[in-house]
Image (cartoon, rainbow, N blue to C red):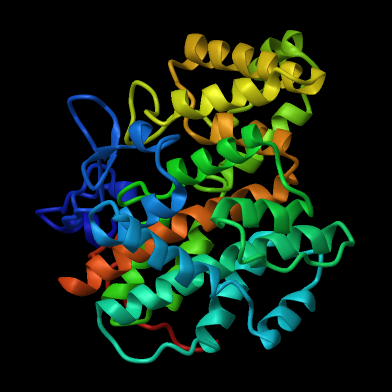
Length: 380
């Protein structure tokens, strides 16, 4: 019998901290009445498509939408901070192509922290760090996609807005207005989502008194996992393996019989469907309509969504429409989660600053279930 079993009052163990309220936040919430995600009180579907990603970033950091002057100031600061320090760019180019692009992004954040020039503490200094990191991450992600294609990096263009510049650095050309809008909307939808695993990891690191770059490095590591940000890559992987909608049923039956988890479905917060999905779904449909491959992907997605609802009662989450949308935009599948980082760094850094403003060390207890006290045996 273990020590834990001998204890009279065993503690309640909540595995995965499901349903546990760890702290307060004013950054975002899923509204109980509508089921919609709110950023600082604004419904995200209302923000997506009507406000730029730069405006949403300002909102997430500052709590209010920017004036024209405030938006211009943020945009100028971001455009002037896109270049990577030469030692960082050289170090990233030296990493093996066998590692995942998220390993490159994680390493980049740590290196950027080591080369950061902003000094001092306090909210203003951390806002400068957040903007600098936000500006440089698209340069990292774009250069890495091109490196894996055997292409030279495209330098950032300060005449372009955030989303235009990111796409141009990745693809070496300007997208259509339709593609640009779909990418911008995805960045708005991914920007923030409460105490998810990566955000909580960032807050835990921050609670120790550590710095913003260390917290974001931890968050990137958490996002890499297929149960979190890596799900959008996993979604595309099974779309690649399905030739058409007629293959969905037999494939799904085999997966479920084997006990496999079908990525892109279900969410701990949403029980009746992710409130962000309908918005991204509209943009996926627009992208898919113009090509045969797009129509095939959409047909497979529709059949699988229906089958999962019928067999498991599960609805798609944001990763489900976003994976094929990124594919149709021309992004490589291993780049999908790094794009998530480009967006979510806004939410992470907002939570880092919120944690610092009213900090308490995050240090939960555990319920011990190992052997009780025992004597050390003699040597034989």
